[in-house]
Length: 208
Image 1: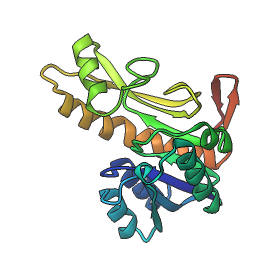
Image 2: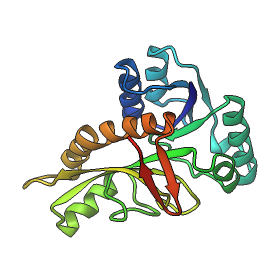
Image 3: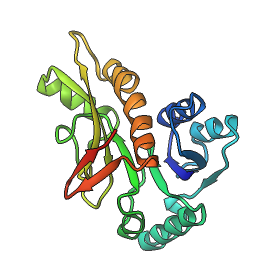
């Protein structure tokens, strides 16, 4: 049984999707053992409490140097014996020490079909604003491993979502979450926990 540590900063809707999937038995051979937040007021911590999941808070502002924060976060997650780290709306930059310490063991969910609308600065509503501005007809979400290139790690799963006439960034964000993010993130976690993801260079091969 693999230990899953989830990093959060806000409302925790993707955390809730993971917890619900776990409750339904859709995440096998793994269990969420800790939630770590960069924000002590994050509603995600209430979601963790409601499921009896222990949680911790570590704030970037409490460290003068980024390297000290990076080291402290790395040590904290190591202390939880994390086999897998999931970024579920974690809004603080990860440092090289953390990424190297958990190489090929960090999964993120991005609200677009990478390599479209991704990279530095592309998060939250901005992703959907740019998709609508560009006039694409299909968007979606991507579950991927994290490396030192922003949104550049090997892709695990993607799911497309149709853009409709009259969409706003808010309505599109909601539909992408409901139809894509909340479905493929738990699936990617389950695949990882069952050793069904093989990384080949910058790509992955999924075995079912």
